[in-house]
Each structure stands twice: as C-alpha cells, then as structure tokens.
Length: 238
Image 1 (cartoon, rainbow, N blue to C red):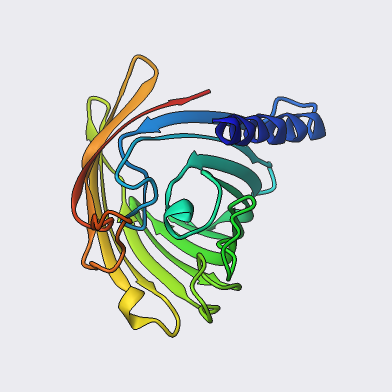
Image 2 (cartoon, one colour; image 1 turned 45 degrees about the vertical axis):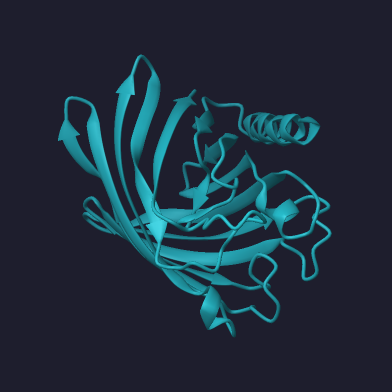
C-alpha cells in the first residue's frame, strides 16, 4: 500500500512542478480511477484483480506535452520480482498536420521500482500516431528490452482505435492491436477491446470486454491473463 501511495503522490508532485513552470492559466489535469482488472494491450497486469490508478498531464500551448501515470500491478511479483506498482513517464509533441489530420510523436518510459527482474521490467518506447476523425493508428517501438523479455529490444506494437460519440453522453471505443515481441514469437499476439463509456455526475463510467489470442501469459495459479474478460471502471478527472 505504501508503494501505491508513493506512486500517486508522484503524479501530484509532477503536476505541481509543471504548474509552477507556467504561472498563466495552465492546461494541467489530473485523473484517478478504479478498475476491476488492469488490462494493458489485452493482458491483465493485476492478475485479473482490481487496480487503483492515477495520473497528471500538462499540455503546452506549443503542442508539446508531458505526463505521468501510475497503477497497482501484480505481474512483476508473479514473474519472480518485487514491487506492486507501475509508474509511467512520457512526453511528446502533438499538432494538426492538415485540417482533420493530427500527428503525435513521443517517448514513454514504464518504470517498475526495484523490480529485481533480469532483464529489468523497465521499458522505454518511442511512438508515432495519426488521428483522422474518430480513428487513430499508432506504432510503438521499444528502444530497450520489452517488459523483462530477454533480447527483445526493437519489439513493436501497432494498433488502431476509435472513439465514436453516440450522443447523450455515450461513447464507444473499439480497438485492435498486434504486439510483436522480438525473438519471441510465442509471446507475440493480437489483442482487442470494445468499451462503452458515459459521464455521470462528473465521473466517467466505462464497461466492455478485452482479450487476446495468446495463452502463454499465465498467473502462478495457471490463470490465462490474456483471456477475454469483462472490464468495468470509474474515472474522475479534475
């Protein structure tokens, strides 16, 4: 629990520093959420159990942005390491290329404090994305080993997602992606999700399904962490 509190404190500290850097009315935002299962690229990071999450973002008028995000996890311990939190730190540049077409490039580092895995679970990716209307296509490339996989530098993840406004506060977000783990075809897979969201009383409520076509990601008890499952979450942004 101390790790969770420390991670969420880091997001608030990060946001405070960004706010101090810009004394004008700043586009600074925070978020906190609770989900029944933390899925990342279709695979449960929390052993199919609930997770507490929170983050902070700062968008500069120039198009540059920075942010941080944290979540409770269980997969590092399941892999023989230590630690129960993931902390992400990222930054990039987003701009309109032509009317209706937006480009986004950046770098994202996933940090698992004192994870003790070899290779380390810590991972850095560079990414590029194009958004046209409600659809976004994105490619992420690992400049380090990927989440503890040996000799996996240069792994790639490509995905296409969308966000459709259904009216009356409802939105629908379909997603499909493919994770290539370099030099480890057994760990490579396709993932998918479909989420329906609605804002109620200042909270964003979401529900849907997510899963993968891979059965090699399992918990110590033998649970398939990539199987199709129901996702439910509540999120507050401020």
